[in-house]
Image 1 (cartoon, rainbow, N blue to C red):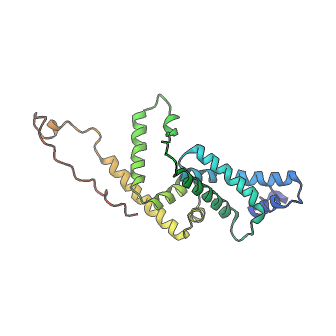
Image 2 (spheres, one colour):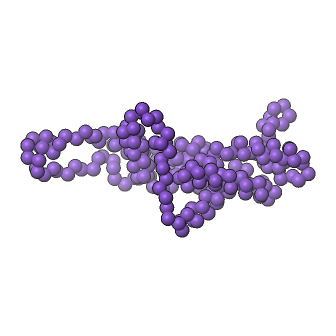
Image 3 (cartoon, one colour):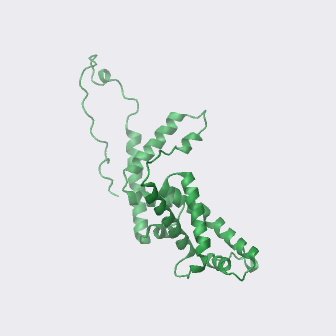
Length: 226
């Protein structure tokens, strides 16, 4: 939706139009449609990051906009509309996580692997995916979440700060440190041998029972430091 001269209508104005019962229904519907179009992708990304399951994230995204529609009239302009929407999404996800915590968990299928080209090198794909997951798992939870929100989900530092209730300076420093640490961990993984020779060859003996000396941890593999 654009105003006079093709200027984009601000989010707060769109929300105000939708919340005004005296506006024509078509005008209200259009205002809300534009809001959904602007924020749907980012809200889905936030929900997916929290819930981990695309179907659950889709449901949470829909619930977020339902709550937005029902509560549009309560918006007082004391925060940006984007901040308000992200808080609604976070609350929806938190409620779902609390509910699911009372139920047995079901493993989530990695859809990226399911959609992979059957003629592609699946072994290489799995190895790369596993290496990234292992590296991410070594970051502390907050830094990992912030890194994914900014680098994968495309949120700005300000938006990530609003979603997580952190200062924007904290978000910037956490993301910067997480990127450095993730690069170190992935570099260590690349340097690790993938085709190790059999024990007898490594020790210059044909005795398969020759004890193998334990390898030390790769450099930089200790605490995550994030």
